[in-house]
Image 1 (cartoon, rainbow, N blue to C red):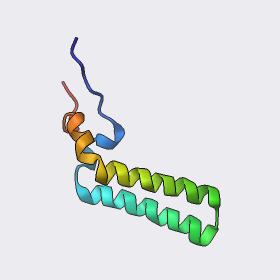
Image 2 (image 1 turned 90 degrees about the vertical axis):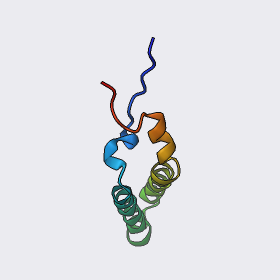
Image 3 (image 1 turned 60 degrees about the vertical axis):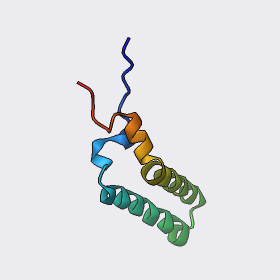
Length: 77
């Protein structure tokens, strides 16, 4: 049996350019700041902070490793 790896959402070829990943993280950071500074909503503040931490881990720390595991983000024919 051949073992095919499924391409994940965060290892799509669309996320390869750094500027796209930076924009996604910037939007989440702005949302997080909005929730903490203006809305004072602890639930959404914590939720967006968790999204921000996960996004930084996924897009900047672990991105290249996961992309190599997924076969450079290209679906197999």
